[in-house]
Image (cartoon, rainbow, N blue to C red; front, side):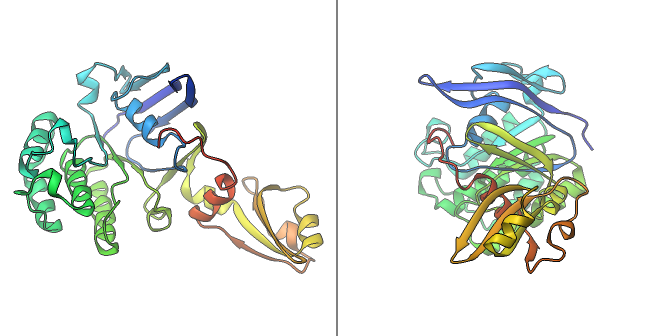
Length: 301
């Protein structure tokens, strides 16, 4: 079990005079799997690149184990950021073979586990003799997964790791992630758009919305507070009078409101005595309710 925190304080980032991250402060605690979710353009990849010193912040500070990450290899030795590969620009040279790319990773990451890398290569059936430029999108994802897991970094970050993978390979990835986490207690941050199938893996969730930190919270506790209340419009409105409504849908005289309770509150208190239906929301549904009506910034990722 590692005991290394990754923290940022009041981080902002500007591109061409436009603010794409705004005053973000958070702490990634050790020994936890985090899910990072947000719409396209919300700033997820920008935030991850700043946390890992691949991109300087305009304002704010980032520390790992209490040390600044910027131009500090001793801090960066604890971090792996494995992001989507661009086959035309993998470390600036798309002619590298997969085995050459992995060899470079083994030099860069001080805790590299070559035996584990070999097992992962065999698991995914990855042809290491192929050149990066010739790989399919799914194979590129497999390379990023091998790098992330075999790095054995205390804090391991994966940006869209399952992009291009079929459903069987995606399921296998999440199994491998859980197995590695159970064995090592490493800290993982997984950024993904495929929320539904990953939700049960995330112990905590970070939501970024239009460059701002919307929340960072225990996933189970967060999901337990969100409900959809459905029925006649006037009945729904009455039930929701003292609730935080994130979104609502109206069809004829019927209405569905997506609401958030306060911790410890009960949905029965609001619907008892009314002809209403109420059911809990999945992580994906509550994310859409919270952020679905917003217009994305169009910058970052």
